[in-house]
Image 1 (cartoon, rainbow, N blue to C red):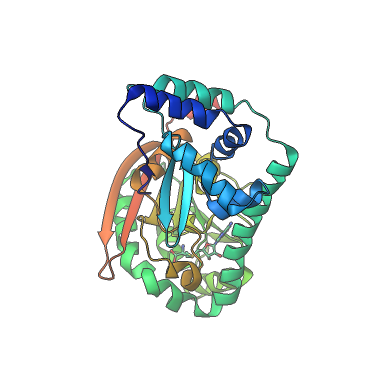
Image 2 (cartoon, helix red, strand yellow):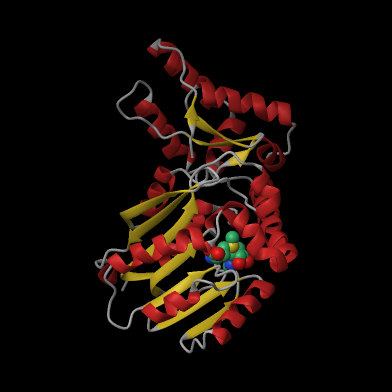
Length: 332
Ligand SMILES: C[S@@+](CC[C@H](N)C(=O)[O-])C[C@H]1O[C@@H](n2cnc3c(N)ncnc32)[C@H](O)[C@@H]1O
């Protein structure tokens, strides 16, 4: 996600001092704690910790100068996440030890409530968008990229992979169901889960039109409810609507059978902030490395990737992440 880390002065002693100074404050340590698996904007963090925006900006500046947080611009907003420790650089060992200690901190209940509230606000914004826009779905999709632009690439990648006999597929967020006929042709059974009744109705019409007998549609929040695992989990242009993409990838990884794979199509990182209002996007695409890091943390292995440049300047990434077969043994 085009993260930038503010590098502290060259002087190694000053760098260490900056890390110590940044760590010498309870609120800043808690900020690092809430950023363990998430990234937040200044306003969101100010809300979580119930302090003013300028106070929070000050704390984030201190953390950034110490190289403990990294920034990513999304339109007018700046999002903060933890910077990755660099073990070979001055302060690297301290940084690792600090995060290790920070991760053992129990967050006060009001802070935990604040994090939940921010996640709920993000989820509500995404859900409301699809409720409002169901009828204009195709037009809105086409503002950036519709299935015609990336469907063939997803299929090309899908068809290079070998699937077990009688393999099953699970599509998360099928939208109007345009991809279901292709999946139904390739898999013994396909389940498609969408949390929007109007979108699911469109998907249902698609199934009827194409006489798809092996597709089950389910109205559910794909992250909240437990779905049966499948050999191939397909997530086309949905991740940027999830309030916590890193956690979402962890949950999606659990839905993949050992030996199977997660096929993820997403926008690459971009700065077109109008996409938030026009397309309900919570995230302006993703940095390729972030997706790989999150998937690998969830026990998946990075496979092939395809990148599709669009005439409107957006770029799409089609990613395959494999679940090792050994999981069959470890998860018994
Ligand atoms: C941008 S559309 C993508 C549709 C389709 N996959 C495509 O590529 O054309 C995102 C879809 O994900 C669904 N969605 C968003 N959040 C979801 C959730 N938490 N659980 C299930 N579906 C979700 C929306 O209702 C919508 O149908």
